[in-house]
Length: 204
Ligand code: RBF
Ligand code: MG
Image: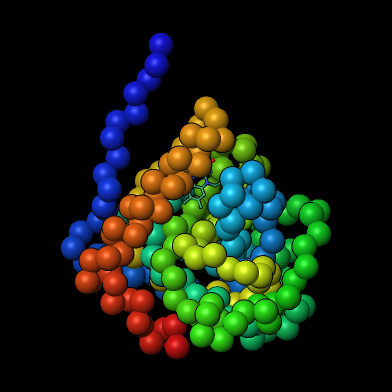
């Protein structure tokens, strides 16, 4: 028996963001499992619990406990100490012993990606496909960065909700849905009342 998935909408949300959006956050990029890059070919910037928990609290009476969201994002060279970033990473939901090089965003390039605002899709939840034991929050930035930026500062504004987190029969099915999410985010952000947040003072 085959189960046909119902067709997904290509654009989501109202003509302009409504409560609880826009949701603004400033935090740091920490390391995750590395699966986004290696398994999926869709790298994600993981954010610490100190930022994801307040986000989920703000969403709790509007959206589900977990889900996929869209908005705008920019990364900047770190303004905090390496110790503060390490502490945030240690306190965060995702813990793994993979060793990554933290460059604190010092390889970001002026006029190319340093502080440049890009569209994003964000996943907050338990990654049911992978059966994670801890909740994680991660942002896929719709841009090809040349270098990693673990430890960098990251600012994002969430403007809407796409769908709940799902389990999948295969990694291909998960990748297909994430790629569809990217299209939904781009279509949804192209509307004038969403596009204008790209130039928000928050990113300057
Ligand atoms: N993981 C899931 O298990 N179920 C999902 O529905 C799901 N949706 C995602 C949507 C987006 C836009 C992104 C960026 C990630 C999503 N993930 C999902 C998380 C994915 O499993 C994760 O990025 C990798 O495991 C790397 O940590
Ligand atoms: Mg990641």
